[in-house]
Length: 415
Image (cartoon, rainbow, N blue to C red):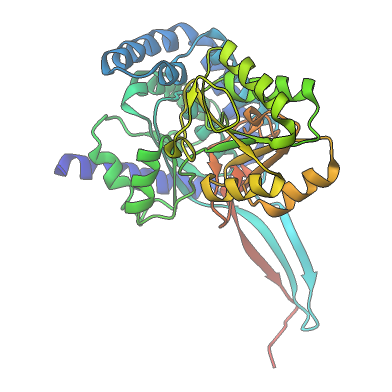
């Protein structure tokens, strides 16, 4: 690694840490003003963001990105407007900093409160989706954290244009411009350095494919919030309603195939084989390649390697199972604890599915494409965490806080 990269990253870390000290006690009004001003700046600079995105799209096409990856990278006026809406939604949310999580009195005369406090400095490493720049910047700021953003090489220009709008918002609110920093290089050595910055970064959030997340989880010395893969299952129970099921499964796979909430495997109860085949036919008609197991007719036969795959593309695996317990066993073996859904009218079946699986998100009669912080009322998300420490599921502003204890007495002494 060059000395230049080390020096640059050390400087970013020091600046972010200094900014985080001020953000820890920044007023809710100032943070809201900054996010609203940033949203206005994004709308005002739409043409510049689109021009920057076209450079990234050309770069992505030259690199041979798949259609699904190009879709993740692409911005249009609607997606830019949605970014601004996300910023305003986060701005309007209740500030989590200072929230009293619990409080109690002790016989010793102590009054104890557990209150939310910022994590400090968050490093976010992400790939193609440039909107993560806005989402991550907004959520970190709302929770009183400084953030260092390192977008993917594909989204370099788009992320830079969006970051400029966030900085405009900070300045308009009188908050430190260093509260939201961006690594200004495509050099991958910067990522390696971020993973070692234990003196200045409190947590790393990787958002991207298996290669990126696996690298971060293997090599980071800083704590990590992450999900490795979104191997999302939809199970069709014997009690499933045909109309609901056909509509929901089609949406779960086809709305956007390149996001982590897209369905990747369809499991069909043997007594619902007819409905399962209808769903497969619907998927094929919609342009999805269905790799089907025994008893189902798809585009091609499934192999053992098709189960446990995150395609992020117009491909889905399908398998017949004997009953709900076989579906649960399959998900336990091949799933990634991200999002799994059951289509069923039998409440007992849904309850069994919820009780016996431990995915971060479990759904009943709803599309897995709802696995998103915005759809959960968080305004945006910094990612979906599938671990069991600190944060699980969509990581919004509240999940980007820790807590501290505030203890008061009236001359209390310990015996």
